[in-house]
Length: 91
Image (cartoon, rainbow, N blue to C red; front, side, top):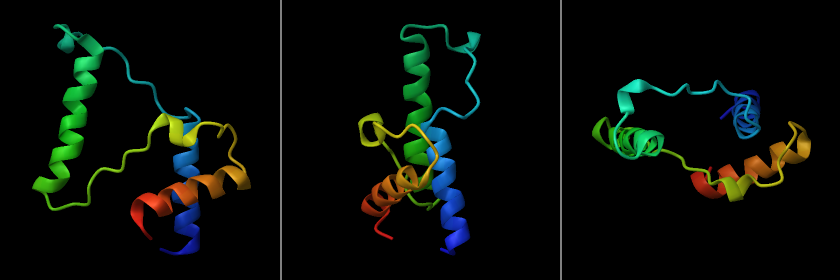
């Protein structure tokens, strides 16, 4: 992956971790037992299964505890995210 593309990817992930992403509004279509939690599980199921169906790479999951302490988009944060990605993706 070219260095510029890698930096854009890491910057995007850091922005995502910091919460700089659109918020999902509640929906009336999921008004059964479990509500929003059930909706998340339903969508996560598709995120995990569809890549296999369409022969894509699996979904990359990053847990909240893995990015604990990353609050800014700076060199240190980018380095930590890069190390995390390297461990998960085996670049």
